Length: 286
Image 1 (tube, rainbow, N blue to C red):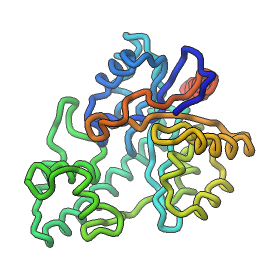
Image 2 (cartoon, helix red, strand yellow):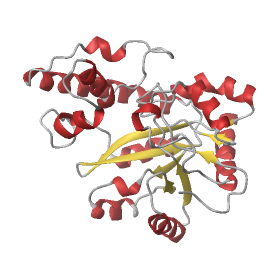
Image 3 (spheres, rainbow, N blue to C red):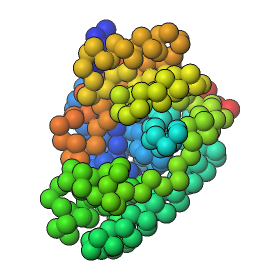
Image 4 (cartoon, rainbow, N blue to C red):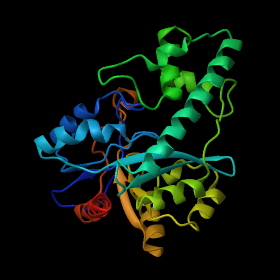
């Protein structure tokens, strides 16, 4: 679902490419965005901004407005919290250093998961996780890549089985890794002049955590999301309005990984997109 008064302009501000756990290259997402009738786009890969540099020249050539974005992994009282960031310069050294830190964290976590799988008689070659694809090697490797290898080796039949039996939280091969805190992530985004958005708040399992997050210095909420029913969207819109926060929307498109969610299934209206683009351009001019 999405805002009903968006007119002809639609911008999907949440999707993933082959730079993290999506199956479409950044350039393919640009083409798909245009075919879907989108006017604006942000490729928000997990813990990496690599897609922007790859897609920006092509998007400019095709006439699609592209906003840098990223979805950072964080933790609050042992609860996983995803934070969308916009408005920053993709060349900001603080952002790039934070992404590199996430890469090292993910490498350590992946090694721990592979060791757990080995103990359960499901060995995986770690080099296979970084094998180059159509857009080169993935910049941000995580559990979906491990799940794909499990399918390839015949350990499970699909990604859902991999997570439900082995890789999901509380399962025998799950490992949380050492994630930055929510506050640390907020501080980092704001130090780069960026905007911090609570991603898909309905996926946060403990409601008392959501309550705590709403008391923190976020700038907005992803109220429009592909899996939200309209009545739930309105709840998050109201929470944002109470705080004078930004309301964003996006599909969380992953390509073949989530075939039931098309790009543009949810979107952000022009006024919000233009505001975020202005913040981005101001930061680039500094």
